[in-house]
Image 1 (tube, helix red, strand yellow):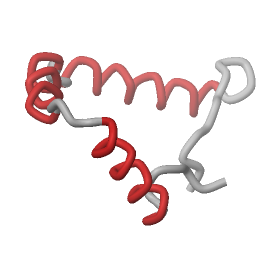
Image 2: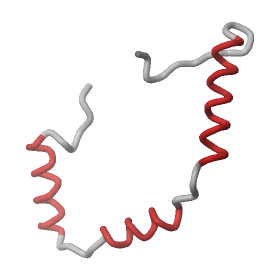
Image 3: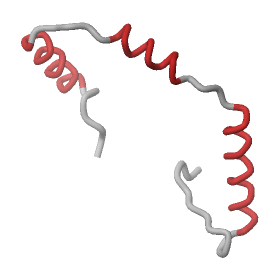
Image 4: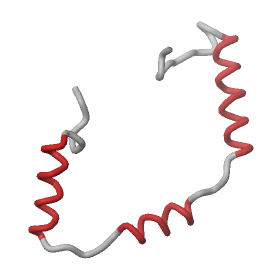
Length: 70
């Protein structure tokens, strides 16, 4: 499976059309989540000291969750 693919109408018209139709379907049936995401972000935000922020960043780096794998 290729998670990222690029099809052009000139090179692969059938696959391009299928992907375009799928994207249109998602757009038409999607739900605007802007308000829900903003509420979630506001609930996750909190004021912390610089020491707490540094400790959290160090913990994420040590646990391997802070940087993407190369």
